Length: 460
Image (cartoon, rainbow, N blue to C red; front, side, top):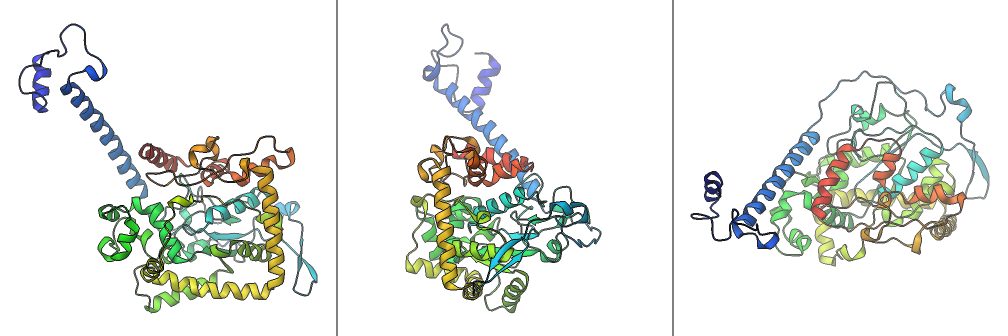
């Protein structure tokens, strides 16, 4: 051992004096576990140092990329027409569909193609996104997509400048990726008569799902003791929650936050009711996860679509063993903690059933039954084994769904072999996860994929 290497080893505190017997420098260098302990320790420290530098660099890079975007003052240019019905695209106009009212009378209507879907978190919105992607692809519609990632720089409020290659006056049909809603900016992107739709979920179940999926990304949760961190959090939320803490919005009134509001308000603050009424006046349809099939029938009716347009397979679903079954006491605590979301949900739950009544209960039941029948047919045609499987059992890389930090809890599908040519493309599209579908539609997701590499290393 040279004097320099000996000095380096001493400085590490790994040896006290000269090399021990059998150290490097003697004939027959030992290998593997036969290496002296001080060599193995130095190697371990070196690898840890390299890994630490790499991860720190990646975290710093991601932090810079997620920093507040610069505000750009864009020229105000109205979008007076739909891209689909612009004179230059007159030959592409969609064929009218038939619509039947409560009395059984039929009338014709044109499918709606200008759509703002507000994609809320943990609300089956990935399944709805797949429906919109398929409809837009089928009719060659123009999507307003984010650039380099799968959301519009969430959690910052949406700005038109976040749209890939945006220039004032550009025409788009559909915007549907995650954003923090900003009504003024969205209204300047789409035609004035665009349909605004969104979806909500019971806040107690949404909180449980969000805590599981995003909890690892909220540093304040790292100090929660014990195995059952959700129960401990609900026992004393204030102890583990800081309104201005990093990613804290995931753990309190996430729906209200997604819609661009202050999620830390007192539920009786007049701004809460103002925010709810603003959403009610803006969105033509607010769907509910707990009544997903009824929601799709209302969506089909509102947009004058066909039942083929709303066929679906459940995407981004967790395996049941990772879902925490809330006790009545935990549910009550979760609703109290998310009191604004609970107020929001109750308001739109009432308006939802008003729409169902207007549609007709019997008619709705018949349509839901038909939707279920058609979905079962497609599952038999498309899905190997007929059901979702765990991530490790998914055979194709392109069918692997995005997983939360630190575990593989999201189910996916295997495509059946020998699918009839008539259904092959449709089956693949219906089963394609969001990230892969966005890539297929031409979105460069390099930031998302970089973060995915870090996530995969941690999961591994």
